[in-house]
Image 1 (cartoon, one colour):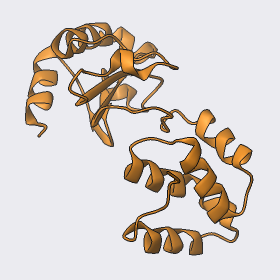
Image 2 (cartoon, one colour):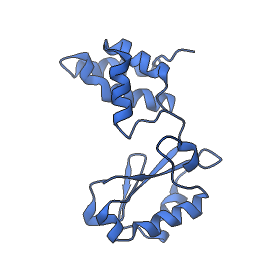
Image 3 (cartoon, helix red, strand yellow):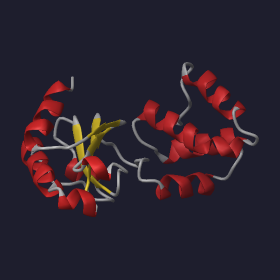
Image 4 (cartoon, helix red, strand yellow):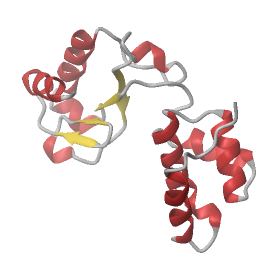
Length: 164
């Protein structure tokens, strides 16, 4: 079954395209919208975005495979990214990551196998992340679009318990 933008998302997409001098420039927001609707980016999603933006499917695939915020396979409702670069490592992000692995009962998702880091109920996907640009409040994690700072295992529990 081919992907199409929903009736609710079609006007949003049209408005996004109008914000740019050429259609292709709307690729990132169009892909975000498609991923929000579909959960992840499939070949059908890429074909639809390519058609709407009047570019090749390969150009869309290049963007999807370059940016780590786009997923080509299903992920959990909550994508948990733990920064593991030097400033976070110096502030013990390993303790936070190990706590998350134990609490969620999963390992860190592999780049080409996100299921390894996804809970059996599909609620969470645990990933390591390169710099989340919050070195001054390390260690940090991002859950979907929300950043959590100065983490301890106790703070991680509070955050996870607050999610629906």
